Image (cartoon, rainbow, N blue to C red; front, side, top):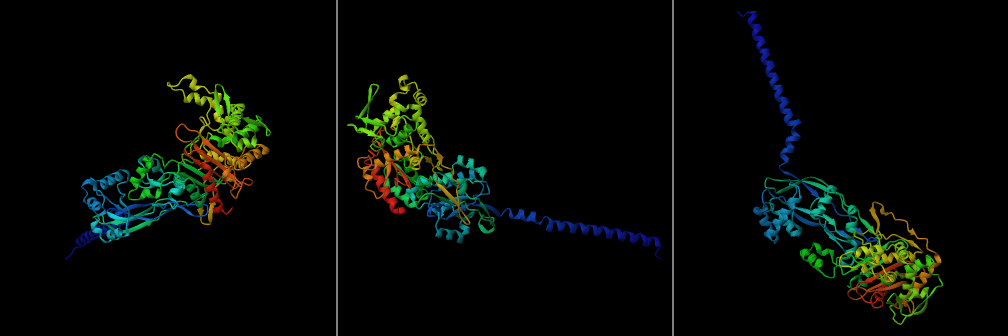
Length: 598
């Protein structure tokens, strides 16, 4: 017989076993749930971490257009071959050896390129082994992934095309890979080491607007690093498109007016400060920097003794010679040194101390009024005016017209020129090889300064801004290139600085304008312009230099009675203005009249 006590004990053990079993099952369920649900994302991510590679997508660069929407710098997408190199030294990488043979490039150069990129990039970023591969090469890589482990094809939107080529190189600039120093400076702004950077011109000046925001593409690769698929993609944001004040037709005309001679040509709207053209010669073709022989081409350009990369319009300063005479005469009128009725006798020279300072016309001009002093460009009259003004007053008016300091145009590396002083000369000649007599400022220095010679230096743009001020009735509009940025509804116009008023007397200004108009009439220094269908006002300049032929200048505006266009022609070592700058100006004016239908 069963006892009550025995049944009770057995039942208690069964209950205890059931409870323990239930607890174990519950614990197992919780663990499985944690593995399958709670930690699913973590283990999945860990699994995919061996296959997923995050690839930055370069943003298309903003494009550059002229005032009418004609392209000046545009993007041309190209196919690029990227590669995930394995750990270890690239010299022993057999895939690189195969790639070098397939691409037809030197293996050592490819290994060096990969090594250099690996020092700049993060470990998870691919290197570039070939830029601008052909469609046939793209198809071959994608059809034969086993032959290209670790490789994939990417679309590179960074290749730039410059429709005007050499005609606008100094204005628009170009892009190129960053140097190590440039990358260190740009890293904090989110740049990658293998991005392209604006190097000169508008490309450099407005890098912050033109550079877009990077995107990102997660790609899946197998254990052999072969590309499988795109997992997710965040598209990049294109940089801002820019519209600049240039008229590309006038730009080409300005470049052609120089005829491959060393020099610069600038065309502006004097009332607004808008630059219609800014050309330099000799030049270079920025499109060739990305060609197969781009490195050799760049080396030839850099070593060229004619310095084709020098921006002669704003980046270098020269003796402005007689182009500055209108500013000096106006300063003398404004300060009461001379009157509007003053006359000057020019016998062909002026004795200053124990030296004769000659006029460009050795037989002299005879007696001249203010209009002919400017129109016939009398040096002797300006010697006298400069000496009467004195160095301090002369420097004051040069500075008032903007000489000796950058104009503020939106281009990089603008030169400021030089308006010398007695202090400057003493400092400049302070070396041991100079004597005290070399450091003294003489009256002859002041006379030379009055005709834009001696130590004075100015850029072609500074000379043009001076003439703009006269043409614009004493108002100086700051030179500008940016017209606006592209928006969804059109163009957002850039802000402009208000013109600077100088308070010059209107009658004094009118007299100076008459003198500049006189220059382009019979008997003036630019009389060859008198037969043009539009009245021109301007000023010639023939700058004596230490070596070579004189620099040749002409600066002016038209129509003379209603200035719409101003311009400057500068030809380095071109000879007399009559033989070089004035004929170039005539051609440029004729071309502009046809282009703008004036």
